[in-house]
Length: 364
Image 1 (cartoon, rainbow, N blue to C red):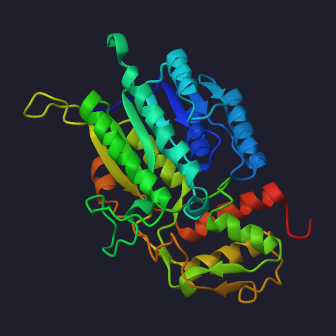
Image 2: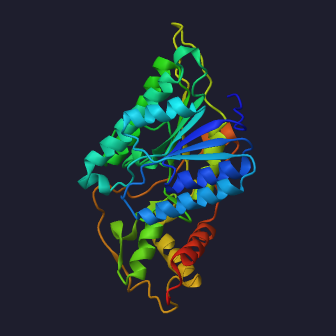
Image 3: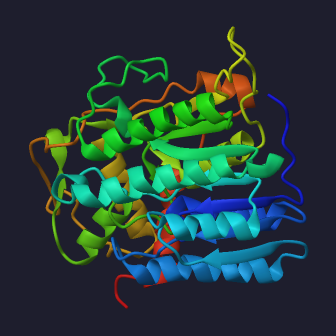
């Protein structure tokens, strides 16, 4: 892999108002001289739009402080082919990071059409735009990095989950669309010599996170006086990964596109790669819930009188869920010298402190 210097480059980040997208853009603006970041997001109402607007405001503030960086935001829908093509034609990105997607396993059970539009049609539009970025002999997109998910592993019983494992039995449409993205990327790499890297994220959490994820969801429910449900009667494990660790991995991957080459027929060999980004240390769900409640009390998000046992109940597994996730990160370590390592309590403490600052203490 050759090093791709991001200084002075134009980088398109889709899902710019999203959780990971925001944290990535903040790092790029702060640390990369001369960079021009093009943000792309339709700011839909899948969850609280005011949180997305808050993230965008954080980016605007960071861009204003950046001495030698440019931020441009395009409020567009990824499923709108014409809009995607316009952005590519106007700004000519050299690196594309596709984080836009309809997220959530459970939501996909009742709203499958949203996943086909955003995750399949939207990703197809990105691939087509990357393909045509080479028209006329121009340099085009040097690297497409895109978000996949640990969900592709389904009910995989072999642990840790390896990118070498077969992932042909998804248990949710969300997972199926993410696997479809990987297949589409491989195909476009083979046909059009587009360097692509897919990243299978494992249960990302942290400040400004998604309200439908456990860390944020449980906090909101407890604040409203509601019990949280612990699925599979608490017998679950998750490879929780702090958002800064995810972003560090994405940044390193962006700068090392898979090498182009030719097969025995003289055709592109598909410059394609897929990696796990996880903490490589699954946590028992009950330990996560206990630590979360303790840190929320410490940050005064919840009162000192909070009773975890009274405010939680253990229930059966639900459709689309899996009992455990566990990332094999050896290839990431081998190729990029990096392994996520933020301790769960440290990460949850940072989330709790952000939540307290954003929403106020329990007695406000």
